[in-house]
Image 1 (tube, one colour):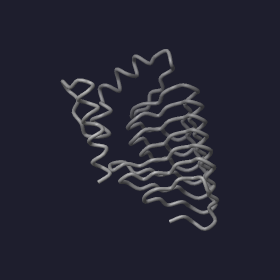
Image 2: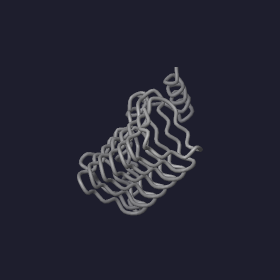
Image 3: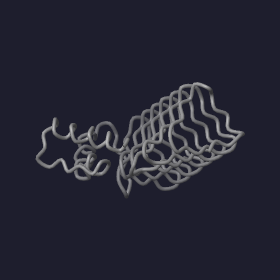
Length: 183
């Protein structure tokens, strides 16, 4: 359901089970795609140009009131509470939870299963990951990858155990699993 006071540019793509609250603005080129899950965008939110908001079969997406999602940002299967700021080019992954007042700066990333407490700030080009949250600067990317590997992206998001599989086998299973979600 789209509230009648929401302002949505005609070029916006809205697909699936999507709810948009009163007074929300969605700018040209944005894509709001609920693939197997639901998307709920609160009141007076701002979704800017070419942002992508997605849900999936196992991860709904919730964006709170007065939250701004910047141009070219991507949010998949996350919960973002009220009054958060997601800057240009930022990315938020499945199962993440951002409490009120969280700021994700330009090109920042909040990765899978991450919890950001109230008023978290993740600087430009940094990665937030984990619960408790750890913020990785670009110089610590190898440490981040080691910690992410412990959780396992494909297992967390798609339920695929990648132990002993080649990249070809992993991505074959991943695309097959994704396509199965579409029915």
